[in-house]
Length: 254
Image 1 (cartoon, rainbow, N blue to C red):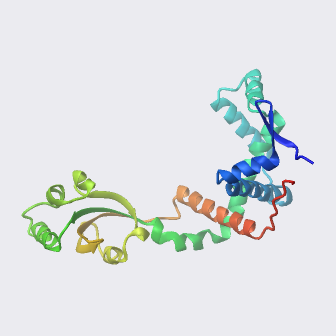
Image 2: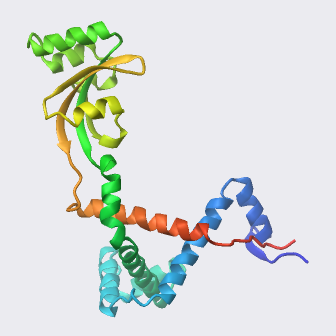
């Protein structure tokens, strides 16, 4: 018995089995199934938990704001938009309410773990603004360091004249760098330094570098955007753990 068609393309029916095969051939089947499992978990949580209720007024206000932003304040225009997007008011209302519930679920799932996770990730969240001079030989690096210390030339002049990296055009300025991604040899010295400190010469992948600390940008839990990023990461980890415990069987017929 043939499997029912999932799609019809140019009057040709494509069965669910063939759709799965197409996805597998394209290397996208795993992501497709993962997306379904993720939504299944979210739907189950929304339907069964009692701590995710959203006041009706909040949902209605969000819909009003959306309509104003999209210039859909007139009922006929909004109705036309819904139809073009294959939706209706009830479905759209449920979607907005569901979005709020997912955000509330993130808060519930992450709240007890947020501070600990922040401490765990802090070495990667802290950033440092550095500038650098990268040259081919240790002798040249040592000579440039002496010139900087004796003030016979400025750091910026020597970066433009001698550095072999593209950032020499901006005086060797690297911009913000995650503290956790720095090689141990650099991070150990930076942690004991202050802005303006010259570090090196240090060998890195066969080259020699002088580094200057410009500014420390320490991560803080007072940063609302950072908090949201950490909550999102914890939430995705939580979903991934739930998915790993699922017994999943793919059944698309013979």
